Length: 177
Image (tube, rainbow, N blue to C red; front, side):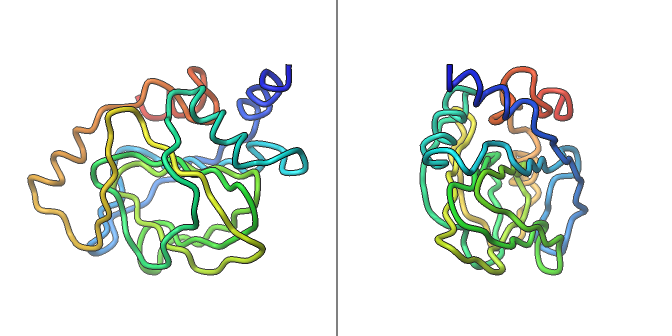
């Protein structure tokens, strides 16, 4: 029953999609929006980290790690990335240097399409996130411009079958098709 409620809350959380233009060496993604949920899960309940891991796994995005976000600008060219805030709070810069600053706290989630720059700006209170990726996508860490071939490979990455937060009927499945 609790798992069903968790899925319903996540599916009903308001998703804010936004696009980012290329920013110097950070390509961002010209076709796919970033997806941001404030309050994807209730942070007042038990361990948010375990709950995000279960939610992501249930929705076909196997969780791969628990940690913070790197404090330098980088992006992933070989995988889309879902982050669920397990604890604490932080500000991230999304989109590369001088990009969009977003505030995150426990219970929030964000999906970064391949190419989306991100960097930890500030953090407090034991900031920790769960990182998850679509099956068969292995993340890399890029801190430099892509070659034309690398950009084409990034743009050809397959779409995930489901949204890591909202499942098969989540906003990703509508906005990324």
